[in-house]
Image (cartoon, rainbow, N blue to C red; front, side):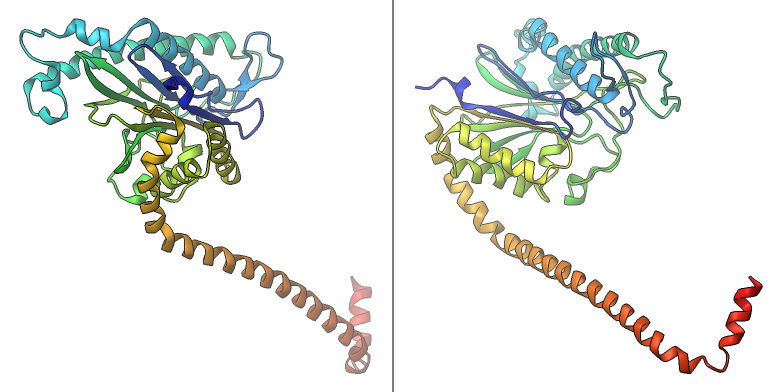
Length: 384
C-alpha cells in the first residue's frame, strides 16, 4: 500500500519570476490531521516596491511580504497550538458531546459554546498575525524610500488566506475551513465539487455572477486595520474525496466551477501517475494564466493512483456529457473569433488599399479639376 503522503501535489506558478504575490501553498501532514493553505498577496493595495527582506538587494512589494509572513505564521501557529487538542481540552464531555454542536444541530445551545471555543482560538491567531505583520512592516520597509502608501484607504501588507484543516476529535473525522478574502478551499466527492469558503465581498448570493465575481474584498489579512478569520466546520462523512485549496489565479481562469472540476478530473483520467496529473493540470493553468497560481490537490482515503482514477471515472464521464454542449458552443465561438480576426485583417488591408487608390486617382484627376482655382490655393499657402 502506498503512503497517503505520496498521493498529493501542489502547483505554484509565479506570473513574474521572483516577484510572485502568492506565497507557496502550505501542506502540513500530521499523525491524524492535514492542513492545507493558500495565500494571495493583494497587488492593488500592496503593490508598492518598498520592502527589503534581510540582505536581499531587490525591493519587494507589500503583497509579496504579506503572503509569505502569513504563511509562516499559520504554519508555526498550527504546529504549536493544535486545534483539535485545544477543543478536546475545552469540552466538558459530561455535559454534552462535541458532535451535538455540528451542522445537524445548529440550533442547539451547545453550538454557541463550540463556536466560542473556535473563536477564542482564532482571536489568538489574529492577534499574532497582526503583531507579526506590523513587526515585518517596521523591519522591512525602507524608510528612506518615498512611500506612495499615504492614503488611509490603502492597507499595509494585505493578503488573502484560505485553510482546510481535517482532524480527528473523539475518534470522529471533522473538517474545518478558515478564510479571509477570496481564496477558496473545496472538497471533491462523488457528487462533485463543494466550496467550503464564502468570499469576503459585499454581495454574495450564490448566483454564478457572485461566484465568478472579482469584486473588491471587504475583509482580508493586513497590518493596518482589524480583520477577522471566518470559519466553518462539519463532521466528515466521506471516506474518499479530494481536498483542494486554491487562489483565484487557479480557479478564476475557468468560466464556471463545473469547468474547474472538469479540468481536475479530465487531467486525472488522462494521466498514468501523479507526476503526469500534476504536469497536465499545470499546463492547462499556464495556458490560461493571468495571475500567480497556487493550487493544492490532496486525495484522501485512496491506496494508490489507479484507485483515484477508478473512483472518479463515473463522475468524469457525467461531467463531460453535461459540458459537451457548452464546449461545442465555446469551440464555435473560438472559430468565429478567428474568422473575425482574419476578416478584420483583410478588411484593414482593403481599407488601406482603397485609401491609396483614392490618393493616386486624385493626383491624376486634380490637375484638370482644380485648374480654375489652383492659384487660390497657392496664394493661401503663401499667406500662411
